Length: 418
Ligand code: EPZ
Image 1 (cartoon, helix red, strand yellow):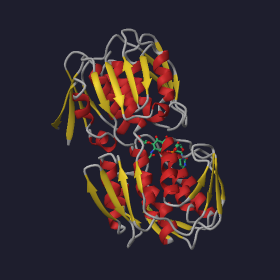
Image 2: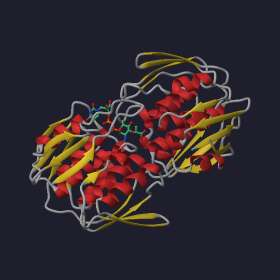
Image 3: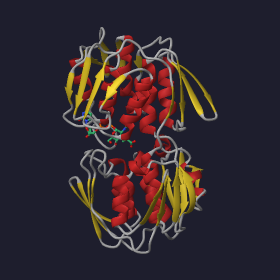
Image 4: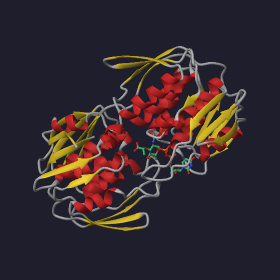
C-alpha cells in the first residue's frame, strides 16, 4: 500500500487541466453494452474504477483496445452476464451493468453492491423500476438474479433523484418496447452525458438534465465515438486547493457551468473566482470567511465536494455550518481533520466548523474517495512538517495522477510505500 506525503504551506500557482469525469465514464462504458459494434471513447480517465469495470466487462465478452487518447470498446459478441462479488465489492457502480445486460441479453447476475464507508447505498429504486418494466428479480447468496423477455416501457417515479438509478433505467429503456417516463430523475451532468452517447447510438431520449426524462424504445443501437465530459469534482477539488493555499491557479478543460454552486460559495467566502470559456481562475486571499453549505442534488452543492469544502472552512475566519443531506455517514473525514487541529462539532447530519488560523501537519488515514482528497488538501495547507495520508488506494479510485498535478502547481507532495 502507498501513502501520500505532503509538506504543506506552499501557495499553489500555475495551470492544471482536469481529466474526464469518472461518474460519466462508468455509465457510458456500461452503455456501450447496448450497441453491437465498436465504440471509441475519448477523455476516459485512467483510474482504478475504470480498470475494474473493464475487467468485469471483459468477463462479459467485451473486447477493449486503447491508444494514447482513446479507449475502444467492442460489445458485438457478449458471452456472459455475471458481475462477480470480488470485483463488485471494490466498485459499487457495477450495478450500472444491470440495466444494459437485461436490455441486451435478457439476463444478468450482479453481486448486490454492499454498503460503503459513506452509507448503506441501497439499490431498491433500481430494482423496483426494472420489475415495473417486466423483469423477474430475486436475491440469492448476495447476487441479484434478473431475467426478462423484451423489457416494456413504464412510467417510473423515483422516490429520490438517484443518479445511477436514473442512468440504469435510462439504459434499460432504450431497447424496451414502447415509452418509458422517468419522473423525479437526477439532473446531474453525467446523466446528460450518458444520454448524449445513447442518442448518438440511435436511442430516442428527451428531457435529460431535467426532472422528467422520456425514452421511446428502439430495435437496435450502433457503435459510436464519444468524448467524456470533464470531471466537475476534480475541478472543484483544484478550486478549493487554490483557495486553501492562498494560491493562484487556472483550471482548464473544465465546464464552469458544472461547478456553479461551489463558485458562488467560494465568492461568498471571499475567494477570487474568474471564469473564461473552458477555464476557471481561482485566487486565494488572506481572509477566507466561513460560509454555510447544504449538500443537494445537482445543481445544488455536490455531496462529493462536501469533505473538500470542509477542509477549507477549517482555516476560514468565523464558523461554517455544513449539512450533508445525501448520505447518512459522510463525516468520517472529521476525526482525521481534528487530528490536524481542526475545530469541528458533529450533530447528526450537521457539522459546525470553527475556523482556525492554521492546520498542523499530522499522519492521517483515508477512509473513502472524497475524504482522501480532503486530507490531501488539508496537508497542502498545513504547516509545521509533513502530513502523511495513508491508504491512498481510495484516492486512486477517483483521481488521475493527483500528486503529479499538484506537483505541477508547486506543491511538495509525493508517494511513498507504507
Ligand atoms: C452517484 O452515486 C455517484 N456515483 C456518487 O459519487 C455521488 O455521491 C452520488 O451519485 C450523489 O450525487 C456515481 O455516479 C458512480 P444516488 P449513486 O443513487 O448513484 C439513496 C463519488 O465519490 N438511494 O444518487 O449511488 C442513496 O442511499 C461517488 O464519486 C436509495 O435509497 O447515488 C443516497 O442516500 C460517491 N435507493 C441517495 O439516494 C436507491 O435505489 C442518492 O444516491 C438509490 C439511491
